[in-house]
Length: 368
Image (cartoon, rainbow, N blue to C red):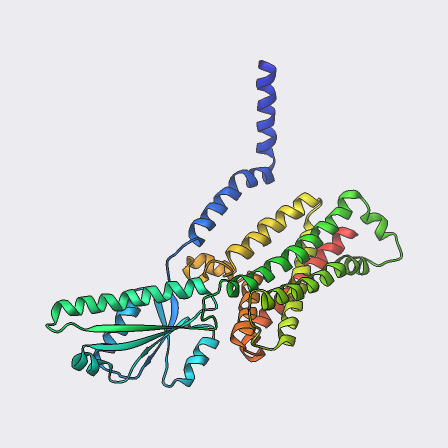
């Protein structure tokens, strides 16, 4: 029994001496709990909205103030003409435009009823539904409280219109996200595992003494995954269009060029991971924890970024998938050109250059 107790103590000492094991045992569960707890939320926060007030009377100002002061919305624009509505949505800052009809207050006073239109960006169908429900609830609360203080009851009828996804098809949400996820898995994870396998099996030294230069070895390892990723992109786009009915409103050439840029970024991430991983297991763990989970949770793929705490919103800014999903949605669903997604494109180009620079530098050091 004493021998067994000594053996158990030895195992505890081994665990406590290994910092990576302690990090996996204690750090990973805490991090996942905090991330899942804050990310998985059905609340609406800081959603960008705009008002198109054609009445400019006391009633519309009260309703607008009540919506803004609720704490759920941030006013981004005051729209002056119908032509500005589309521009507001294409800017990416506005999720909802609230349109008050002309002589709104007079119609309420004379007829007891008036109309307000809620126009929503439905590229994210779940968020569009939440925003619509919140806005409708605030307006109905205004009506209820007004009816308590007036002799003649009033009624405000919200008319909801969904842009870019009128039927609220979930495929419009998950196809861009699946593209981002699959390209990370195929390009980054498989590249890192492939290079780490050569190190683990000791065949990297054999490759280094061959006539091939280190750069040629790296390019030779990643080219097959780049080609396979391009095939996956075409397959996903074809399935999305012909099976799920996801349109491609914008330029197909621009869409494919952005996908190729994201593939290059994912490949550079794979090389970077392989430069710090000595085994396939470590490469897979880093890829899964550092790439796959953030792509699902912190890219806006499933959960709206606006609903997250500020610290997680800042972390989202360094997630390549976040920028890629914005580009894909804008091109496929809104039909925008490079003039509307050039900032996101520059972010991806900058990230690709940075990752390549760091990974190639580290890789050369390790190869020497």
